[in-house]
Image (cartoon, rainbow, N blue to C red; front, side, top):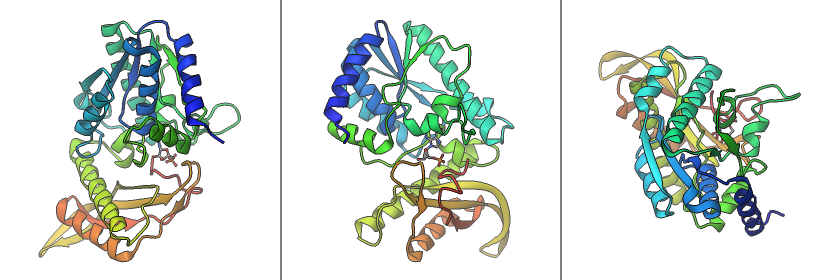
Amino acid sequence: MFDAEEFIAESIESLKSQIDDIAIIACSGGVDSTVAAVIASQAVGGLLHCVYVDTGFMRKDETEQIEELLEAQGINLVTVKAADRYFEALKGVTEPEQKRKVIGELFIRIFEDEQKKCGAKYLVQGTIAPDWIESGGGVRDTIKSHHNVGGLPEDMTLTVVEPLRDLYKDEVRELARHLKINVAERQPFPGPGLAVRTLGELTPERVAVVREACAIVEEEFEAAAERGEMEIPWQYFAALLPVRSVGVHGDVRAYGETIVVRAVQSMDGMSARYSEIPHSILQKISTRITNTVKGAVNRVVYDITHKPPGTIEWE
Ligand code: XMP
């Protein structure tokens, strides 16, 4: 039985003994990094510098919400606006593993710049067990190199500290509730953000389509759950597929891409079952997406694949 209070007390002691100089942490606003940041700041206080990198792959209004949330925790926050650097680095990159590597490396480079500015010697990360288990090593094949692990360059000069590395998602959520952080009930969001939900080339325009579609899926599912028409899934989002099909807008022929809606039930992300969603809700989502991003998308499909054999994300 996981004991949140005991875990936090032990983590604080352990972090105090590991960190004897300035530390830097990547705050993505997700449950994992926020919990890691709060525990680390409770352990080492002013030695901790929190950096939030706005990659350009965040969800709608997310940057503002994250800034508010972290500041409310008394965390000293530096926001780096890096969207232009990310899009530039990812020009022409379509292969999923390559995307993750580029994103991970740029993320670390930005951190190194911030580290030089504040003189940090340590990098605290919110890596959890599924991140490194699925990133391979030893006898396991690499399923996906997760953002927090696979992108680390070999010449990195910071010492990495990972207070949550033996935990699963449900345990981290329990810690968040215990710490009264109001991200506790938020659904998980991958480190590389909307980049892994934008299949094919990453352009600001295509990512904006995914951002809008994800917001619609979230709004409709949450409203339907509120009305008691469905259970809220463990994770739910939209991804953009580089598959174009013929459609019609008014009486004009359209040739747009495809949005896939994904919703799953899971305990910890290691395996998952696709969620059965009432057709009326899916239909509403389809209409809203095709009306909102007119021309860019003219077909919406629903993914009915469990994990395994699929993964939760499409990349
Ligand atoms: P997959 O797609 O591997 O996802 O079935 C399992 C869970 O992990 C999330 N995910 C990530 N989380 N960095 C993260 O911190 C990543 O690179 C990453 N990729 C996927 C995914 O959203 C799901 O909840």
